[in-house]
Amino acid sequence: MKKIIILLLLPWVFSCSNENSFPFEEEIIEENDESLSRSYTLYWDISNTCELILQEPINEILSEIMNIPEYEYMYDLILINNTKINYIYIYQDNHNSVAAYEPKFKMMYFRDEYVVHDAFPEEFIHFIQDLAYDGIYGRSKADIEFEAKFFQDLLNLNNGAVLRGTGDQYGDLYTKWILKIYDEFYITAFIYDIIMEGISGLTYHEFLEDFAAANTSYGTPEHFDPQLLKYLY
Ligand SMILES: [Zn+2]
Image (cartoon, rainbow, N blue to C red; front, side, top):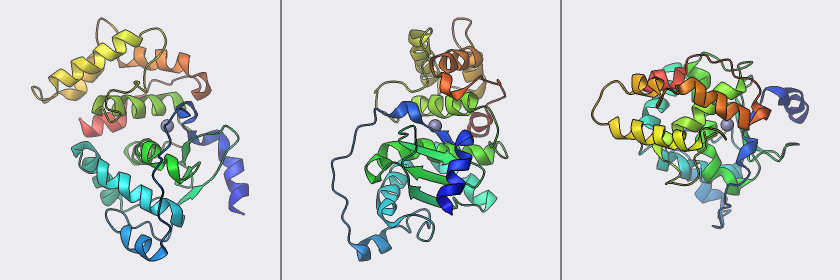
């Protein structure tokens, strides 16, 4: 029954299919049921709604990202809304996506347990966007994906690895833009304004356009205000 629902929903799934280059974790996940059952109460009780094999890697990455104030702040949105992800499971879709978040039924899936460490933060962000926008179902994927990737670039979660939100035409300027915002982070209270101001005459929306042109599977941007960034900054 579940599989049928999932297939019908694919057109609206935020599948991060341009992230196929995630390095695989080589660490072996211990399959000790008892230790797993005690390990997932850290931040988020997913014991009843998450496939067992995913619980440990999810809690591992959750405890990592919760050291970052922005993620802690995002987590507050979950508490405020008193909500949760309905189901987290392993699934291999037709696009060989690493992971995806499905907003209509608030479900999340991963290709396997090894991709969780690198893929979870973005899917977590999509879940939070769902709250910040009061629903992302049916919204432009280009806008949603760009905001999520730009945000991760801003936090440098990848430790200097390839930037996620870059397009083809303004790649260098995108990097300069990120560095410019990064430089002003601790000296101004108006981070959101700095973000929207852009750099060298290019604003947030031109970079979104460039990203969308390089990732046509996300469709045409609608250029609505980035609500998650607004909430955070
Ligand atoms: Zn995504």
